[in-house]
Length: 363
Image 1: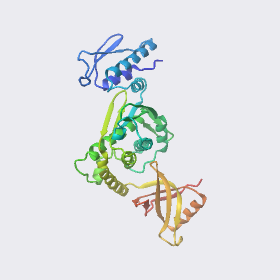
Image 2 (image 1 turned 135 degrees about the horizontal axis):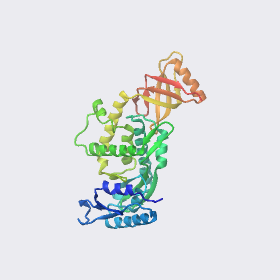
Image 3 (image 1 turned 180 degrees about the vertical axis):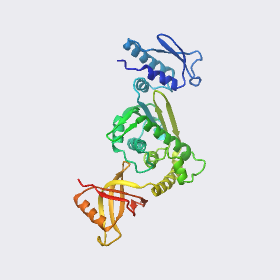
Protein backbone atom coordinates (compact mmCIF):
# COMPACT_ATOMS: atom_id res chain seq x y z
CA UNK A 1 0.00 0.00 0.00
CA UNK A 2 1.25 3.47 -0.89
CA UNK A 3 2.51 5.56 1.99
CA UNK A 4 1.08 8.77 0.53
CA UNK A 5 -2.56 9.50 -0.33
CA UNK A 6 -3.48 11.42 -3.45
CA UNK A 7 -6.63 12.98 -1.96
CA UNK A 8 -4.74 14.37 1.06
CA UNK A 9 -2.09 15.93 -1.19
CA UNK A 10 -4.72 17.53 -3.44
CA UNK A 11 -6.60 18.89 -0.44
CA UNK A 12 -3.38 20.30 0.99
CA UNK A 13 -2.62 22.43 -2.08
CA UNK A 14 -6.22 23.53 -2.66
CA UNK A 15 -6.56 24.64 0.98
CA UNK A 16 -3.35 26.71 0.62
CA UNK A 17 -4.72 28.65 -2.35
CA UNK A 18 -3.36 26.60 -5.26
CA UNK A 19 -5.71 26.30 -8.25
CA UNK A 20 -6.38 23.15 -10.23
CA UNK A 21 -5.38 24.25 -13.73
CA UNK A 22 -5.84 21.12 -15.77
CA UNK A 23 -5.98 17.34 -15.45
CA UNK A 24 -4.52 14.63 -17.68
CA UNK A 25 -4.44 10.87 -17.63
CA UNK A 26 -1.32 10.65 -15.45
CA UNK A 27 -0.99 14.06 -13.78
CA UNK A 28 -2.96 17.00 -12.42
CA UNK A 29 -1.50 20.50 -12.62
CA UNK A 30 -1.82 23.28 -10.03
CA UNK A 31 -0.96 26.96 -10.34
CA UNK A 32 0.35 28.70 -7.20
CA UNK A 33 -1.27 31.53 -5.25
CA UNK A 34 0.13 34.97 -6.07
CA UNK A 35 1.46 35.71 -2.59
CA UNK A 36 4.21 33.06 -2.42
CA UNK A 37 6.53 34.53 -5.04
CA UNK A 38 6.60 31.81 -7.69
CA UNK A 39 6.52 32.71 -11.44
CA UNK A 40 3.03 33.26 -12.91
CA UNK A 41 3.52 30.46 -15.44
CA UNK A 42 4.69 27.96 -12.77
CA UNK A 43 2.72 24.70 -12.68
CA UNK A 44 2.96 22.05 -10.00
CA UNK A 45 2.82 18.56 -11.50
CA UNK A 46 1.09 16.06 -9.21
CA UNK A 47 0.92 12.42 -10.27
CA UNK A 48 -2.26 10.40 -10.04
CA UNK A 49 -2.23 7.21 -8.01
CA UNK A 50 -1.46 4.18 -10.17
CA UNK A 51 -0.64 0.52 -9.80
CA UNK A 52 3.01 1.54 -9.38
CA UNK A 53 2.70 2.54 -5.74
CA UNK A 54 6.47 2.65 -5.15
CA UNK A 55 6.91 4.98 -8.11
CA UNK A 56 4.12 7.25 -6.77
CA UNK A 57 5.75 7.40 -3.33
CA UNK A 58 9.18 8.16 -4.83
CA UNK A 59 7.67 10.98 -6.90
CA UNK A 60 6.01 12.51 -3.81
CA UNK A 61 9.29 12.26 -1.87
CA UNK A 62 11.00 14.30 -4.63
CA UNK A 63 8.08 16.73 -4.67
CA UNK A 64 8.51 17.31 -0.93
CA UNK A 65 12.23 18.01 -1.40
CA UNK A 66 11.43 20.49 -4.21
CA UNK A 67 8.81 22.27 -2.11
CA UNK A 68 11.03 22.82 0.91
CA UNK A 69 13.76 24.14 -1.39
CA UNK A 70 11.42 26.50 -3.30
CA UNK A 71 9.27 27.55 -0.34
CA UNK A 72 11.35 27.14 2.83
CA UNK A 73 9.16 29.50 4.85
CA UNK A 74 5.94 27.71 3.83
CA UNK A 75 6.93 24.08 4.18
CA UNK A 76 8.56 21.65 6.57
CA UNK A 77 9.73 18.25 5.36
CA UNK A 78 8.47 16.21 8.30
CA UNK A 79 5.16 18.08 8.38
CA UNK A 80 4.55 17.41 4.70
CA UNK A 81 5.31 13.71 5.10
CA UNK A 82 2.67 13.50 7.83
CA UNK A 83 0.04 15.67 6.12
CA UNK A 84 0.45 13.84 2.79
CA UNK A 85 0.01 10.42 4.42
CA UNK A 86 -2.34 10.81 7.42
CA UNK A 87 -5.44 12.73 8.40
CA UNK A 88 -3.69 13.92 11.57
CA UNK A 89 -2.87 17.57 12.21
CA UNK A 90 0.37 19.31 13.19
CA UNK A 91 0.15 21.70 16.13
CA UNK A 92 3.04 24.05 16.79
CA UNK A 93 3.69 26.71 19.35
CA UNK A 94 6.67 29.00 18.90
CA UNK A 95 8.10 31.04 21.75
CA UNK A 96 9.80 34.11 20.32
CA UNK A 97 10.86 35.91 23.48
CA UNK A 98 14.28 37.59 23.59
CA UNK A 99 15.78 34.75 25.66
CA UNK A 100 14.80 32.13 23.04
CA UNK A 101 15.81 33.96 19.85
CA UNK A 102 18.76 31.60 19.33
CA UNK A 103 16.48 28.55 19.31
CA UNK A 104 17.26 27.49 22.88
CA UNK A 105 15.18 27.80 26.02
CA UNK A 106 15.80 27.32 29.73
CA UNK A 107 15.03 23.80 30.87
CA UNK A 108 12.51 24.95 33.48
CA UNK A 109 10.70 27.18 30.99
CA UNK A 110 10.54 24.26 28.56
CA UNK A 111 9.03 21.94 31.19
CA UNK A 112 6.56 24.61 32.35
CA UNK A 113 5.42 25.42 28.81
CA UNK A 114 4.85 21.73 27.99
CA UNK A 115 2.92 21.14 31.21
CA UNK A 116 0.72 24.20 30.76
CA UNK A 117 0.07 23.52 27.09
CA UNK A 118 -0.90 19.94 27.95
CA UNK A 119 -3.43 21.34 30.44
CA UNK A 120 -4.85 23.65 27.76
CA UNK A 121 -5.26 20.69 25.39
CA UNK A 122 -6.93 18.70 28.18
CA UNK A 123 -9.39 21.51 28.90
CA UNK A 124 -10.23 21.78 25.19
CA UNK A 125 -11.12 18.07 25.26
CA UNK A 126 -13.28 18.49 28.38
CA UNK A 127 -15.10 21.49 26.91
CA UNK A 128 -15.76 19.72 23.61
CA UNK A 129 -16.97 16.55 25.36
CA UNK A 130 -19.22 18.24 27.95
CA UNK A 131 -20.06 21.67 26.48
CA UNK A 132 -20.06 23.02 30.04
CA UNK A 133 -18.76 26.54 30.75
CA UNK A 134 -17.25 25.40 34.07
CA UNK A 135 -16.83 22.21 36.14
CA UNK A 136 -16.74 19.78 33.19
CA UNK A 137 -15.46 16.23 33.61
CA UNK A 138 -14.16 14.03 30.77
CA UNK A 139 -11.26 12.06 32.23
CA UNK A 140 -11.50 9.15 29.78
CA UNK A 141 -11.79 11.40 26.73
CA UNK A 142 -8.75 13.43 27.83
CA UNK A 143 -6.69 10.29 28.32
CA UNK A 144 -7.71 8.91 24.92
CA UNK A 145 -6.90 12.17 23.12
CA UNK A 146 -3.52 12.76 24.79
CA UNK A 147 -2.45 9.15 24.16
CA UNK A 148 -2.89 9.81 20.44
CA UNK A 149 -0.67 12.89 20.45
CA UNK A 150 3.00 12.49 19.50
CA UNK A 151 5.87 14.88 20.13
CA UNK A 152 7.87 15.72 17.00
CA UNK A 153 11.34 17.15 16.49
CA UNK A 154 11.68 20.85 17.16
CA UNK A 155 12.39 23.39 14.41
CA UNK A 156 15.24 25.83 13.95
CA UNK A 157 14.83 29.48 14.91
CA UNK A 158 12.95 30.68 17.97
CA UNK A 159 11.97 27.79 20.21
CA UNK A 160 9.28 25.70 18.48
CA UNK A 161 7.41 22.72 19.95
CA UNK A 162 5.70 20.46 17.41
CA UNK A 163 2.98 17.90 18.10
CA UNK A 164 1.21 15.46 15.82
CA UNK A 165 -2.38 15.43 17.04
CA UNK A 166 -5.37 13.28 16.07
CA UNK A 167 -7.97 14.47 13.59
CA UNK A 168 -10.40 11.56 13.75
CA UNK A 169 -13.17 10.15 15.96
CA UNK A 170 -12.38 9.24 19.56
CA UNK A 171 -14.55 6.55 21.13
CA UNK A 172 -14.74 5.93 24.86
CA UNK A 173 -16.98 3.75 26.99
CA UNK A 174 -19.28 6.74 27.50
CA UNK A 175 -19.15 8.93 24.41
CA UNK A 176 -17.91 9.72 20.92
CA UNK A 177 -16.21 13.00 20.03
CA UNK A 178 -14.48 14.32 16.93
CA UNK A 179 -10.88 15.26 17.69
CA UNK A 180 -11.04 17.79 14.84
CA UNK A 181 -13.68 19.63 16.89
CA UNK A 182 -11.30 19.67 19.87
CA UNK A 183 -8.49 21.19 17.81
CA UNK A 184 -10.72 23.92 16.40
CA UNK A 185 -12.34 24.61 19.77
CA UNK A 186 -8.86 25.35 21.13
CA UNK A 187 -8.00 27.67 18.24
CA UNK A 188 -11.41 29.41 18.30
CA UNK A 189 -10.77 30.19 21.97
CA UNK A 190 -7.20 31.35 21.32
CA UNK A 191 -8.45 33.68 18.57
CA UNK A 192 -11.09 35.16 20.85
CA UNK A 193 -8.59 35.77 23.66
CA UNK A 194 -6.04 37.31 21.28
CA UNK A 195 -8.61 39.68 19.74
CA UNK A 196 -10.75 40.56 22.76
CA UNK A 197 -8.43 40.34 25.76
CA UNK A 198 -4.81 40.72 24.65
CA UNK A 199 -5.82 43.44 22.16
CA UNK A 200 -8.98 44.70 23.85
CA UNK A 201 -10.01 48.21 22.76
CA UNK A 202 -12.34 48.50 25.76
CA UNK A 203 -13.12 46.49 28.86
CA UNK A 204 -16.07 44.12 28.61
CA UNK A 205 -19.12 44.22 30.83
CA UNK A 206 -19.49 40.70 32.24
CA UNK A 207 -23.22 39.96 32.32
CA UNK A 208 -25.35 36.87 31.81
CA UNK A 209 -26.14 38.10 28.28
CA UNK A 210 -22.42 38.38 27.56
CA UNK A 211 -21.81 34.82 28.79
CA UNK A 212 -24.65 33.60 26.59
CA UNK A 213 -23.26 35.45 23.56
CA UNK A 214 -19.83 33.80 23.85
CA UNK A 215 -21.06 30.40 25.07
CA UNK A 216 -19.71 28.54 21.98
CA UNK A 217 -16.14 29.32 23.11
CA UNK A 218 -16.55 30.03 26.84
CA UNK A 219 -15.05 27.55 29.25
CA UNK A 220 -13.53 28.99 32.42
CA UNK A 221 -10.90 26.28 32.88
CA UNK A 222 -9.80 26.49 29.24
CA UNK A 223 -9.47 30.29 29.43
CA UNK A 224 -7.55 29.98 32.70
CA UNK A 225 -5.21 27.28 31.36
CA UNK A 226 -4.37 29.51 28.36
CA UNK A 227 -3.59 32.37 30.76
CA UNK A 228 -1.31 30.02 32.72
CA UNK A 229 0.71 29.25 29.57
CA UNK A 230 1.93 32.84 29.75
CA UNK A 231 1.99 33.45 33.51
CA UNK A 232 3.39 30.17 34.84
CA UNK A 233 5.85 29.76 31.95
CA UNK A 234 6.81 33.47 31.91
CA UNK A 235 6.14 33.81 28.19
CA UNK A 236 5.50 37.16 26.50
CA UNK A 237 5.39 36.30 22.77
CA UNK A 238 3.88 33.09 21.43
CA UNK A 239 2.69 31.93 18.02
CA UNK A 240 0.33 28.99 17.47
CA UNK A 241 -0.17 27.09 14.23
CA UNK A 242 -2.59 24.29 13.36
CA UNK A 243 -1.99 22.53 10.02
CA UNK A 244 -3.97 19.74 8.42
CA UNK A 245 -4.36 18.45 4.89
CA UNK A 246 -7.33 20.77 4.34
CA UNK A 247 -6.49 24.00 6.18
CA UNK A 248 -3.97 26.04 8.16
CA UNK A 249 -4.60 28.41 11.08
CA UNK A 250 -2.08 30.80 12.67
CA UNK A 251 -2.46 32.97 15.76
CA UNK A 252 0.30 35.29 16.96
CA UNK A 253 0.22 36.80 20.44
CA UNK A 254 2.73 39.53 21.31
CA UNK A 255 3.61 41.49 24.46
CA UNK A 256 1.02 39.54 26.42
CA UNK A 257 2.34 40.23 29.92
CA UNK A 258 0.94 43.77 29.89
CA UNK A 259 -2.55 42.29 29.46
CA UNK A 260 -2.31 39.69 32.24
CA UNK A 261 -3.75 41.92 35.03
CA UNK A 262 -6.85 42.58 32.91
CA UNK A 263 -7.09 38.88 31.93
CA UNK A 264 -6.92 37.90 35.62
CA UNK A 265 -9.72 40.31 36.59
CA UNK A 266 -11.77 39.21 33.58
CA UNK A 267 -11.53 35.55 34.65
CA UNK A 268 -12.38 36.42 38.25
CA UNK A 269 -15.55 38.24 37.14
CA UNK A 270 -16.51 35.44 34.71
CA UNK A 271 -16.09 32.76 37.38
CA UNK A 272 -18.08 34.73 39.95
CA UNK A 273 -21.03 35.00 37.56
CA UNK A 274 -20.77 31.38 36.41
CA UNK A 275 -20.90 30.21 40.03
CA UNK A 276 -24.24 32.02 40.37
CA UNK A 277 -25.80 30.12 37.47
CA UNK A 278 -23.99 26.77 37.17
CA UNK A 279 -24.21 24.20 40.01
CA UNK A 280 -21.03 22.45 41.09
CA UNK A 281 -21.19 18.66 40.80
CA UNK A 282 -18.29 16.67 42.18
CA UNK A 283 -17.18 13.37 43.67
CA UNK A 284 -14.48 13.51 46.31
CA UNK A 285 -13.13 12.29 49.62
CA UNK A 286 -13.70 13.87 53.02
CA UNK A 287 -10.65 15.71 54.29
CA UNK A 288 -12.00 17.34 57.44
CA UNK A 289 -15.11 17.26 59.68
CA UNK A 290 -16.09 20.12 61.98
CA UNK A 291 -19.17 20.46 64.21
CA UNK A 292 -19.77 21.66 67.77
CA UNK A 293 -22.97 19.61 68.08
CA UNK A 294 -23.46 17.07 65.27
CA UNK A 295 -27.03 16.17 66.33
CA UNK A 296 -28.32 19.73 66.68
CA UNK A 297 -26.04 22.20 64.88
CA UNK A 298 -26.96 23.87 61.60
CA UNK A 299 -23.25 24.53 60.91
CA UNK A 300 -21.96 21.02 60.34
CA UNK A 301 -18.98 21.63 58.07
CA UNK A 302 -17.33 19.02 55.86
CA UNK A 303 -14.30 19.71 53.71
CA UNK A 304 -13.58 17.46 50.74
CA UNK A 305 -10.97 17.21 48.00
CA UNK A 306 -12.36 16.50 44.54
CA UNK A 307 -10.96 16.42 41.02
CA UNK A 308 -12.82 18.90 38.84
CA UNK A 309 -11.87 19.58 35.22
CA UNK A 310 -8.49 17.96 35.75
CA UNK A 311 -7.68 20.05 38.85
CA UNK A 312 -7.89 19.17 42.55
CA UNK A 313 -10.29 21.51 44.33
CA UNK A 314 -10.99 21.87 48.03
CA UNK A 315 -14.72 22.25 48.74
CA UNK A 316 -16.47 23.06 52.01
CA UNK A 317 -20.10 21.99 52.37
CA UNK A 318 -22.68 22.66 55.09
CA UNK A 319 -24.77 19.60 56.04
CA UNK A 320 -27.87 18.84 58.08
CA UNK A 321 -27.35 16.71 61.17
CA UNK A 322 -28.53 13.48 59.53
CA UNK A 323 -26.26 14.11 56.52
CA UNK A 324 -23.35 14.93 58.83
CA UNK A 325 -23.72 11.58 60.64
CA UNK A 326 -23.55 9.87 57.23
CA UNK A 327 -20.45 11.91 56.40
CA UNK A 328 -18.74 10.68 59.57
CA UNK A 329 -19.40 7.09 58.45
CA UNK A 330 -18.08 7.83 54.95
CA UNK A 331 -14.92 9.40 56.40
CA UNK A 332 -14.36 6.45 58.72
CA UNK A 333 -14.63 3.97 55.83
CA UNK A 334 -12.87 6.20 53.27
CA UNK A 335 -15.89 6.18 50.97
CA UNK A 336 -16.22 8.90 48.32
CA UNK A 337 -19.22 11.23 48.38
CA UNK A 338 -21.17 12.93 45.60
CA UNK A 339 -22.28 16.54 46.04
CA UNK A 340 -24.14 19.16 44.03
CA UNK A 341 -25.00 22.78 44.74
CA UNK A 342 -24.29 26.44 43.94
CA UNK A 343 -20.78 27.32 45.10
CA UNK A 344 -19.04 30.48 46.23
CA UNK A 345 -15.34 31.15 45.69
CA UNK A 346 -13.37 31.96 48.83
CA UNK A 347 -9.63 32.62 49.04
CA UNK A 348 -8.54 28.99 49.31
CA UNK A 349 -11.62 26.89 48.55
CA UNK A 350 -15.13 26.68 47.15
CA UNK A 351 -18.08 26.70 49.59
CA UNK A 352 -21.55 25.20 49.13
CA UNK A 353 -23.91 26.44 51.83
CA UNK A 354 -27.15 25.02 50.40
CA UNK A 355 -26.51 21.47 49.25
CA UNK A 356 -28.81 20.17 46.47
CA UNK A 357 -27.49 16.63 46.46
CA UNK A 358 -25.45 14.63 48.98
CA UNK A 359 -24.81 10.93 48.56
CA UNK A 360 -22.29 8.38 49.78
CA UNK A 361 -20.74 6.05 47.24
CA UNK A 362 -20.12 2.85 49.16
CA UNK A 363 -17.30 0.67 47.82
